[in-house]
Length: 207
Length: 194
Image 1 (cartoon, helix red, strand yellow):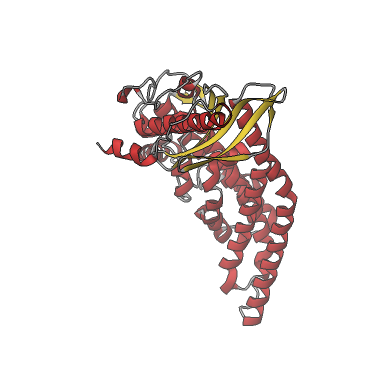
Image 2 (cartoon, rainbow over the protein chains, first blue to last red):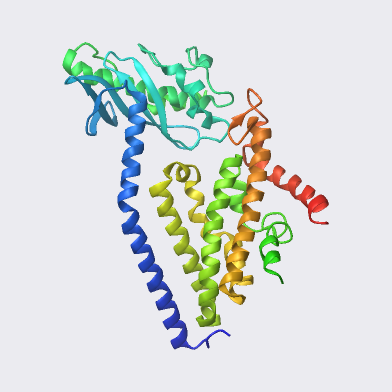
């Protein structure tokens, strides 16, 4: 039934099969390139829209640095005035990078937060994506570092996921600090603040 | 062998998870909830049907010594097509399954069916086999996912009926082995014997 396994047959067969497969893949790639870009852009806009007040015009991506950390952020502009910032804030969680979109109003109040990507334990740390945990950060205007109740703060940590909860708090805090420093460039009022570095955080956890 | 049994063999007699015990990697890893299991099953079914059909058509022209590389290339192509399509049109599903979609390439069921069935049968029969095994796989994953979700999170298909946390271990890796093991016992005792 099968063709004879001569060198010529094998080479020819593999070449043809690979050629056709490559052609199919090339075609599908070309076809889906635009929709994939759109989907990514849409997902980004959606996540920004969720963390800033409605009605603002979302700006192009900007980058800002605060201390040793650099951030990507977006401004929400209404009536040619900046009303809020959406900051992409990344910290190290329990299972890997934890990437948040944090919406911060110009006065340094957290408007809302949303998890963009995480690799926390399913059923434990992964609960940080749920509203019950995330809603605790709404309306928070941190003067000092945000911490979980175990460390004397106000945030109820997710059961059995203190490290994730701490990382989340740190990410939100860093975003707020960035916005304060951005605002400070205009108002010159929020000076002297330093970002909470991840190294300090790790030391605390080891104690 | 009737056309009907070609299709239904995959449900129980040749059930890929509980009877053939193939494709354990996605089975254990993606079944943290019923919905994840269902989506993974459907994604695998897509690849299984298409690769079965194409391989059954190619088989007579492929020299024996290179049939495995050819099958793998065909399977990998369909998996990549699926990956691109999912990224483009169902990004949310792609986000949850992400890593495990490329791993369908090395899922033993797909190559196993290509080798054991599609290479020796015609396209129509191979398509039926793909659908049957695909449904069997999807059902198995959904059931495992459902059991783990009920015990681990107190919900079913995302609908929460027990407040609070469940037995957290069931959402994590050990729970996957436990759920699979006990379900396999039940399957062998009550379903397979009939």
